[in-house]
Structures are given as structure tokens and as C-alpha cells.
Amino acid sequence: MIEVLRMIQEGEKLLKKLKKESSKEGFTLTSEIEMLEKKVQTAKEGELKKYKEDIIDLIEKEIASRYYYQIGKIKMGLRNDKEIKEAISLFGDLDKYNKLLANTK
Image 1 (cartoon, rainbow, N blue to C red):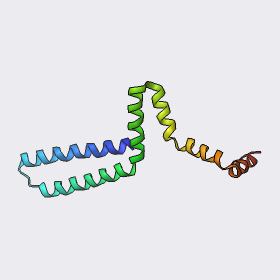
Image 2: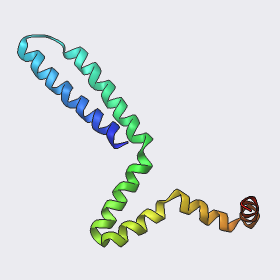
Image 3: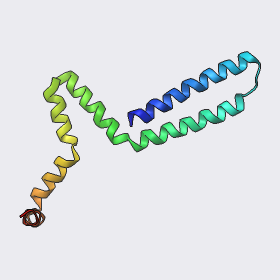
């Protein structure tokens, strides 16, 4: 996820550089570059929406670790952990829990 966002950010930098260099060299590529910038922006928005939950989780962990140090980061991580949520729901459903235990023997 972070790698994709870095690649998009690098693409934005390259487009700015292309825009600057092309105008410096006398080329008129502004409409093409603007079209590419819009595509990059759309891709960035899509990636942010796609990874919204993961990004929020990372930000919450970072904030918790800065204010409450390592224990805060761990607590925040456990609160948002999908496996922990599944385990808690499993304890609430005894039939499913017993069925799962029966399959492991």
C-alpha cells in the first residue's frame, strides 16, 4: 500500500519536472501533462479509498505510540485487529466454537 502511494507521489514529481522542462525547451505539452496529472490524481484518490482502513489504523497506532508509547500502540493495534475481532465473535457463538474445536481433533 505505502509503496503504491510512493510510486504515485514519484509520478507527480516527474510530471512537474516534465512540465517545467518542456516549457523551458519550448514545447507546448500542457494539455497532455494536465491530462496525465488528472489521471494520477484519480489513481491517488482510488488508492486512498482502497486503503482507507489500513491508513487510519497506521495513523491511530502512530498517534497512540507517541502519546502512550509502546503499550498504546499495542492496545490500538489489538482494537483494530481483524483476527482479534473474529476470535471475540467466535467466543460469542458457542456452536461455531465447538464445531471448530471438533474439527481439530
